[in-house]
Length: 52
Image (cartoon, rainbow, N blue to C red):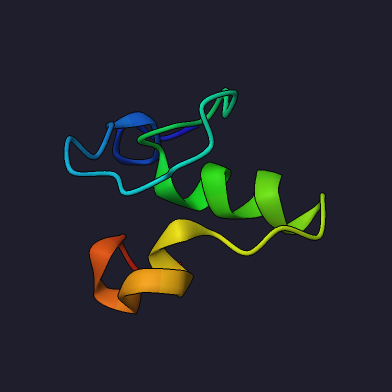
């Protein structure tokens, strides 16, 4: 895995307290989508997270 993928987004808007991928936007989105959950950055503002 590249270092860029593992860099944590300090302003991550993820609202799921149990998210093990909080701050790693791409992994966070994949994690929640696999559970049929909409991510916080999709709910609030698509620009809140880095582009997929």
